[in-house]
Length: 107
Ligand SMILES: [Zn+2]
Image (cartoon, rainbow, N blue to C red; front, side, top):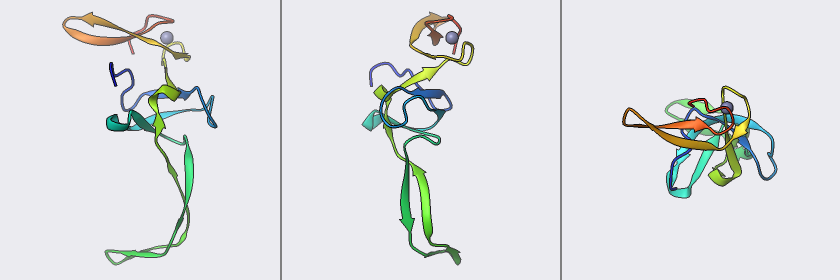
């Protein structure tokens, strides 16, 4: 993945494809696939049969779930200037920090 520029809990904006322009919070990282799961992005529908799990019955119907989206299709949204931005990395007190290229805020 090279430099990890997006981490769980970040807000990202989709820059490509069907959900272009939508924003959501990163729920899960899938480093092997260079993909992430983003809340309410790339929603897919699945038909759920009635199943029994530990005495509970899950009712059948259509469930919606997020499918993975490749990290090249999203950009980090800077919480300070509220724009989808590229990030720079700076070293500060031995730690690597992400900085918004637009407003220079630490993210
Ligand atoms: Zn910014």
